[in-house]
Image (cartoon, rainbow, N blue to C red; front, side):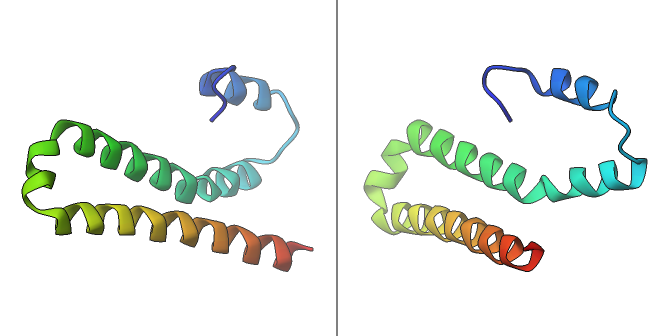
Length: 88
């Protein structure tokens, strides 16, 4: 997900290459963890900004949300490192 070039433009440009459909589909599946992480972080930040009154009343919720976000980021980093190690 590039902020400069829209995702659709990337897909159209890559469709001009000679990559097989199987490899393209596998590559798309490989994007799911990063996409899930971005959605999770976006919804977390959105809920934090919209529901600050609820978080002030219950700081445990804030700790769980922040902890879950950090665990998700750590998991993605770990999976990325393990995958790169196995591919090399």
